[in-house]
Length: 159
Image (cartoon, rainbow, N blue to C red):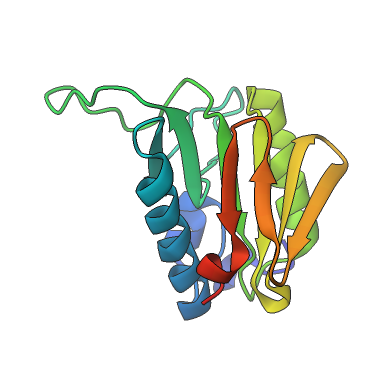
């Protein structure tokens, strides 16, 4: 990151990522809504979930997608040890694209199947199923994640 430790907020230090902006929050909300609306019977859509990592460095995707599972409200988990099927990261104004590319490397090392990078200023989403290879969707495209069988019109995400 280009930001010195002195300027980081507690939020940023705890989560290892910049504080979200208004646009970031709106897009995250639209993604969670659309994913739940269309895929809630197949998947658990979990925003801001802490993942356990071998190096114990914070790793909190904006959204994680898991296979559907029953929630045990009596035994909550602070950090998931199992890798999600997908992680979705939304580029924040104080964040560089290279930061998110580095995060996708870490997600793939954990066993994540799909990584999405959402770029608000371009109304674009890059979907990756392996490091260094991306399929880009923008404008009026419909995002397709063939590994998870998910299709979402970008017009519903960037509205």
